Amino acid sequence: MELTNIAFFVLAAMTLSSAIMAITRRSAVHSAIFLTITLLSVGGLFLLMHAEFLFAVQVILYVGGIMVLFLFVIMLVNLEQSEKQPRFNRQWWIALVAVVALGAEWGYVLHRGQDSFGIEAPAVTVAAEMNSGIEVIPIGNTEQIGSVLFREYMLPFEIASLLLLVAMVGAVVMAKRTLE
Image (cartoon, rainbow, N blue to C red):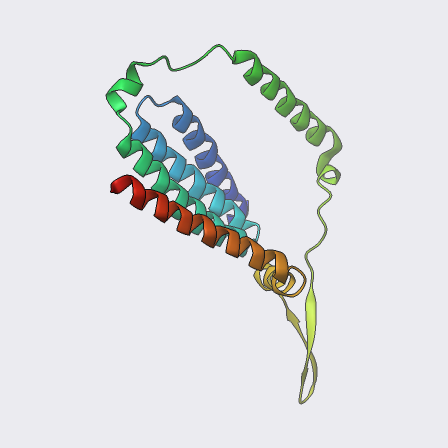
């Protein structure tokens, strides 16, 4: 068995086991720690698929940013009162429907095999002229995403950044008003 296959199975097992631990722990802090392990394992799976951009986004945005927000919420919430509340509600039928849908998807994938994914080969190359001829240089997915983002989607990207800036300034103004 190749090293990449072993790494895949180890990361997949870590992802599944830490995700199960994240939703079954009674302590919110333990759940957050297991969620962090889950997100890091998913980032490792992205790296194994040569999706470096998704790996970086997963680690920086989710593990770095979202988990800090989760930990702030956990620190601000009264944990003693929340632990006394009932853990599960009566919406088990929604979970049952989700499990059946996921089982149907797995059945479809196992029945159709590898053709059900519809993944194309990522062989994108650029020819660069050298003194002695033409050299073929492979382009990674991060360069492809950056090129498409800043050439074809520059205006929506700038609009989204302005909206995020306005939201951040609004949050600071609202926080300042509540502190006064």
